[in-house]
Amino acid sequence: MKIGVLALQGDFREHQEIALALGHEAPAIRKGDELVGLDGLIIPGGESSTIALLAKNFDLINPIRKAIADGLPVYGSCAGMILLADRIVDGAANQETFGGIDMVVKRNAFGRQVDSFEGEIDFNGSSIHGVFIRAPWVESVGEQVQILAQFQGHPVAVRQGKLLATSFHPELTDNALVHRYFFDEMCS
Image (cartoon, rainbow, N blue to C red):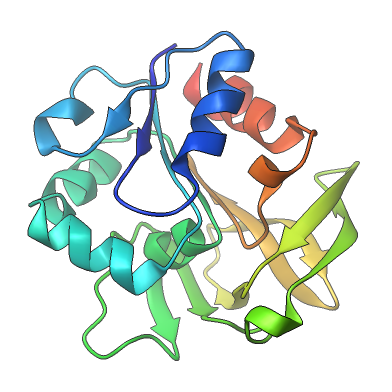
């Protein structure tokens, strides 16, 4: 499969490495026309307001929104979760999102950079090590949203149709469970 990785800012290379290791193409996406022909798209962790600003400057906001509306499978980790949310709490002034998941996400909900941590999570019935860096959590979800993982009582992995979001960074571990789930369950 051809899994694009939004490569404007953040840890996009780590997502590319996992996709390649699992036998998929993983082109860097920086322009709207590069979305054509993808089987899926990954929006990496990083700084959500910076990614949104760069996406606006590179004229990617509307092409990604259209791709989501047209059914392109999309996975967002950490900042990617924020960017897939329909609504944000504590967002930067006038921060835009691509939207698509009927959820309210709180930015930096687990704390600042110095509060970053790791912990074990039950992701859809399987154990996974989660890396939380200035991580968001989900405040609330709509009826169509499935909660796949929680941590400390807060949803940290959700799915709505072909959209997947995690507040943690599975790309920073040796466990490709979340990526396999995205590729096998949503992209194929």
